[in-house]
Structure formats: C-alpha cells, structure tokens
Image (cartoon, rainbow, N blue to C red):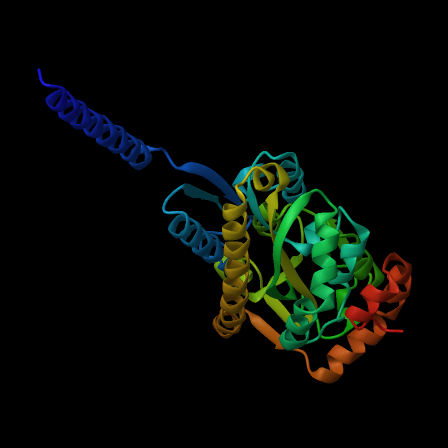
Length: 337
C-alpha cells in the first residue's frame, strides 16, 4: 500500500476515535445523576418559607443546568419537629440548607437575643432598614461564628399573642395564662415578667397542646396562624406586634466548603434571592392573613398608645439583657438607653 494511502487511512481512524471519545464524554455528561441537596425548614408546605425554598431550588437547578437537585423537607421533617436539633444537624453536616427563625438560633448565641427583644422594632420598614444595614451585617457575622455559612437574613413578620381565655389588651391581661413559646430565653423572661406561664414546646406539638387544653395559647405571625389552621382551636388574637421574627437562610459548612467556587456564588445568590422573595411574600401574606383571621377569631388591634404602654412596661427586660450586647449592636438596633 502506498505511504500516502496509509497516512490517509490513519488520519480517518484518528478522526473517528477522537469523535467517538467526544460523543462518549457528552453522553456521560448528559446521563450524569444530579447531586442531591437537602433543604429543611419547620413551616408548612403552604408557607412563605416553602415558597422561598422552591424558588431557591429553581434558581440553583437552572443556573447549574441541572447539576444539583434540591429536595425540600418542610414541617420539621429533618429533625421530627425539634428545631434546636435541626440546627445541630446542620452544623454537623447532616443536611445542606436550612431556614430557621433567629429566635431558635438565639439559644446558641446570646447576642442573637437582640432579635427577640419586645417592641424593639415597631414597623416592617424599620426592621428592613436595620437588617439591610449594620444590624444585619453583624447578625450574619454572629451566625457565621456558630458553625454555618449564612447567606442572608429576612423577615417572617411580627409575632402576635393568641389564647382561649380572654383578649389581651393590657400587660395585666397576660397574668396566669399558659403560653407556648419558642425555646428563646428572652421570651421566657417576657412572659414571666407579665405573670404568664411560659412553656417551651416544639412548634409541631403546639396544635395538639392547645386542642387538648394543655396550654391556653401561643404566639405567632398572622400567616402561620392561618396556614397552620390555629384559628380552628383558638378564640382570641391580640395584634400588638410584640416581637418581630427574622429568619436566616444558611448552609452547612461541610456542604458549602466542598462546592466549586463558581457554584458557591450561585448558591449564595440563590439564598439571597430566596430570602428577598420570602420577605416580600410574607409582608403581603401577613396582611391578607390578618383580614381572613378577622372572620375566624376575636381580633384586637392595639393602638400606638397601647403598644407604647407595653414597651414602657418592658423596660426591666431591656435592663436585664443590656450587657449581653455590644454597644455597636445596641446602636444598630436602636436599643433603649
């Protein structure tokens, strides 16, 4: 065979081999299984947190061309409703992404108790301005020091008081009520200060506790009262905005640290967008929920003067916790002198 023919055959074979390898590589990429990401939160499938988690999943899956598949576990499924245990599992790397109230996180770091102080921030606008500025930056730094990678902080809403005994119009009306609260030190002190019996109970157990008469009432944001159907087992709701509920969206360090740099940015941005989505959704959902709850409950909306009276009566609690917070953190949250 002439040398030129041999060279031509060799080139054809080489091209076929190269093309074949390329096709094999492409096929492997197309058939590669997506990397599963576990996302947990404690609210229901009808909540803004669930909507935000789904929004997060859509962004991640779209921006990575399906490289990751986000599996969402609502209603406290990750740790059977135990919110503190869920945070411990996140820190241990047992799952990957989490949304949890700042109130629950405060049991891990006393500095986060500032988010639970009564009537500290009195409007949605004031709260948003605080977390968009130095206050939010400091909270994220605190969370990062507690073994996770925080993406962002958002607002779930103002927490209101509910019970089956009578309407709460003045601080004295809280006396002797058995109230379910989150496991947050400040909340124990608030309710005990007013003569109520503050009881720690997992959120997922609150419905049964009220239904069975083990407790008189609870506190929660309007949207949670509605989507959790708590109006079916409660009679009175006092809208006095006694505490604002922030939430953190964060990653386990084990998960985040092993991500390629490009993917880290995608996950962080998805977290920030999801947080903004939840905050905007919650603002609207709470307003709508309150209007619906007025048809289901005896709703009392406190006046500005009544809220001011509640805040004045809470000053001993501010004095009790003052030294837990740095001067810089107190200034960022307009802490009373």
